[in-house]
Length: 307
Image 1 (cartoon, rainbow, N blue to C red):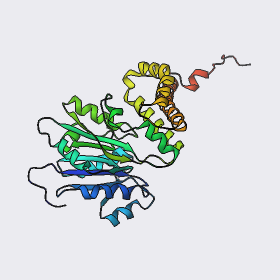
Image 2: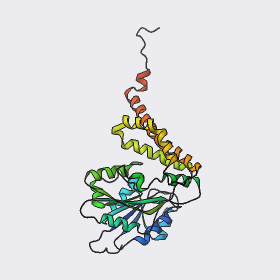
Image 3: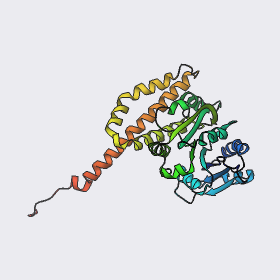
Image 4: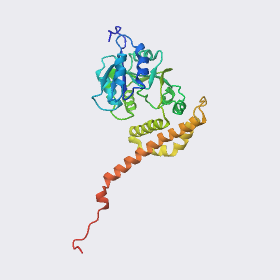
């Protein structure tokens, strides 16, 4: 890594990867030309079983095995712990950086008055399969999707290194840790600087089934983040699930999605909402089992006299 320009913000791009041989090369080659002297890029490999490491080696990108906590957030924490730059930019293997992407983060993170979390708009990559058409209609990582929820996703998230650790880093859970980090950081006085211009293209899952699984995980993560308001969340989800699925089917007036893509998007949204209810029911069942263990609930006591 070359010496940085004096006084400027230096960035570590941290990419968590697992079995990403079909994605990693396009991701890295979109980032490498945007690095300035003083910047760094590292791939944290979460126990891949494919050619991810070989591709990184061929491109000259540093790759480290995740010897920390398994999962994407454990990998990201390891990358952050090893960084020596001013700020961190977390990026996803499904993302491709467009011109100006890294400079947009740098400009936002250069703000010296208040701690900053940076993000820029993401559009879904154009591919011919139905899963991509559904994802384009859902537009899951656009600025508008997250404008009112109080956080932005870790697939394209910039944060000062000091702020990242002051806020406790990522919780090492399967999903939703980006929300927790943003909530804690903003409670400490950080604010979002969001670039509305599209700076990233995201490559969606290849199949409808995989897209459904992604949204089920999102639903479970939303429930885990709202365990302090479970009754309200469950009631809201149960009452408004059909309306939200219908709203997703309709989409924005500007959407040009086919009927098939709209139906698929409505089903995916219903899967997201249903995952919240399933997680709540699972927790309720676990609580009942703890309260009334099976052997106690069903045991009978015979009299002392026998037959």
